Amino acid sequence: MSNYHIKHLEEYWQVYRKSVRNPENFWEEIAEEHFLWRKKWDKVLSWDFSKPEVKWFEGAKLNITENCLDRHLATRADKTAILFEPNNPDEESQHITYRELHERVSRFANVLKSQGIDKGDRVCVYLPMIPELAVAILACARIGAIHSVVFAGFSSTALATRINDCDCETIICSDGSYRGKKTIDLKSIVDEALESCPGIKKSFVVKRTHTDVVMKEGRDIWLQPLLDNASPTCKATVMDAEDPLFVLYTSGSTGKPKGMVHTTAGYMVYTAYSFKNVFQYRENDIYWCTADIGWITGHSYIVYGPLANGATSVMFEGVPSYPDYGRFWEIVEKHKVTQFYTAPTAIRALAKENISYVDKYDLSSLKVLGTVGEPINEEAWHWYNDNVGKKNSPIADTWFQTETGGIMISPIPYSTPTIPTYATLPLPGIQLALMDENGKEIKGNQVEGRLTIKYPWPSMARSIYGDHERYKNTYFNSFENMYFTGDGALRDAVGYYRITGRVDDVIIISGHNLGTAPIEDAINEHPAVAESAIVGFPHDIKGNALYGYITLKEAGEGRDHDNLRKEINQLIADRIGAIAKLDKIQFTQGLPKTRSGKIMRRILRKIACNDTSNLGDISTLLNPEVVKDVMAKAII
Ligand code: 6R9
Picture 1 (cartoon, rainbow, N blue to C red):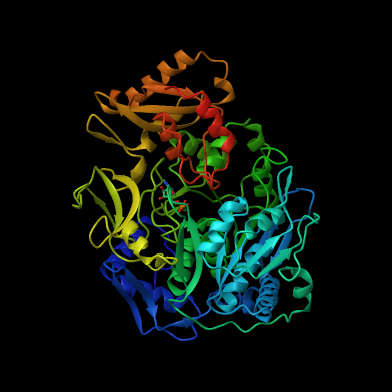
Picture 2 (cartoon, rainbow, N blue to C red):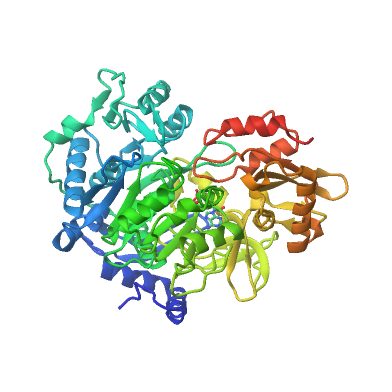
């Protein structure tokens, strides 16, 4: 028997040790017991990080949708698979059962097939968070087409770049989307993008907002009539373990976005296993991840991981602030959500608002909380723990990347300890190492370095679409025989990991390496501070000095800025040391963020260095107006 579901600390260590002693054995047992294979593998793993080449479950045949859908029909046909919560709270929620989802995916898959889409073809999916998004990607997977989801908040330029990079001939989009009070004209964004995408032959359009759209003859097709006429059953295409399942773009700070290629069997096994353990998932739970499916978190932990476990996964179309800041909590109460998984940026935004928005609702159904995407600062962690979890729901601070496919470092709620700002422990099968600048592993505890992974895990990306050389250079050239994450981390006296931020963001002051996360964490402790971002700028004596961009809570508005500056620097001196004091502090209305909520320090660094002629790739920027404002008021 494999230890598929870890239940206490001792068991964690036991499982972890076993997974490291013999990784192949460990994953093989899990794959054997918990999935449906058309044919089992000939070899569990072959790998060579110098190429790099990694193959899991070679020779196996399967279809991931048979694992996410068909397999559940015998016992869970009437169970809700996707619980759709619309943007407008007055519109009814939809409970889509496994039987219905199976049928909808099959119809959609038949439509794609009848339109000439084949195994290996790339299909761009540009849809809001409506059930058709999940259905569309599963339909692709059903027939072996490779989906490439582009977050439906991206601009036409960002969309076009991704369509062209991935050689897509098909796009699935919608007439429009709802986001809070706004209705967005998605179709015209697509039309604009397609002007520079000569490769696109067909565009399938889902009706959501009933907005007037222009349908281009010969290219644009309404989807619904096709679905109505399609057969409700569709034989799944048998895939090889290493056949690509999807491409998902991660924005590099410069240059082209990278289309990470994920393959079938390993991705399925790892996302299913990590979902089950990190969220301590049990049969009747109602699990909700607030991410967008256009992000790896949504792929792995709204769609594939939960459905592979036969779970009920909530899919929310709207935003946390509509109709008011209580919306998340209203949904938790309404559906008796048991696991709630969100991002630090959302937590900080909600913590800024009146606590009555939280207190109004009954959150007693919650058992596990999760966070992902950025380092969570201590204050936000406590706010989440106290007000949402009522000190009763462990917080899984989950660290992972588009490239890793699944969660790599996280507490296992109810089994391993949680510590504010710490992602804590690697999941079973994940072998971490911290490296110094000279490429030497830093052993022992109470050390800090570059976070790397020294052994393959099943859900790792296999390549960058169309550019394997770039894949090698970006991830495998920094340290021999290791995958380099690009993040810095520290391992404390006990061996728990804390992510200190992107290594690119590290600031060297008088010879000391300072990660951004711990300093921002100290700043955010100040009662007047809502959020902060620090960057370095050149300094004659220290080499670099620190520039802080700080947004204030309502309580801080109207306070004397010079006093605030002193208090904040005092806090930093107390918590970290005088070396980390800020030379310049600019109070701003907001911070530039990516659309998945990450602070773009790269732009702030350019502003601090008075070098704003070329801000690099800003196609994923959420709030361009903030950049202008920050630039106008920069302290140079
Ligand atoms: C899942 C996701 C990956 C980068 C990653 C790191 C940061 C993610 C984090 C975290 C600290 C956490 N990150 N989770 N930093 N603590 N719990 O976010 O994927 O969009 O590819 O970003 O996000 O810097 O390297 P992706």
